[in-house]
View 1 (cartoon, rainbow, N blue to C red):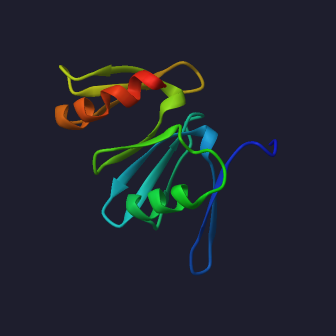
View 2: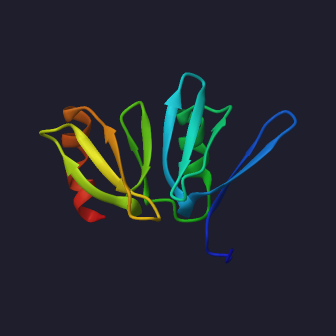
Length: 120
């Protein structure tokens, strides 16, 4: 790993989670937890909600502007973004192998972020 790759460090009671943000496809909310899905197919759950993760990302010194909160359910890595469809209410992310990962998102959330999508 090079120094320029941002890592999110989440500290728990007896655990530390090191999340390589460049390799994250998306975070998925699950009550007070979040699932982390990586571009290489790995997936894990962390004992933090998306709001806490979002706050930690904002406090980081590294550039995390490629991570976008998308509705209550997702934080996505826009570097892996391949398609956005407000009509079908979905976004498509590509993993490291070029496989499509489809996430269903409300029309309102997609329309609200269309301008931001076009900048990535």
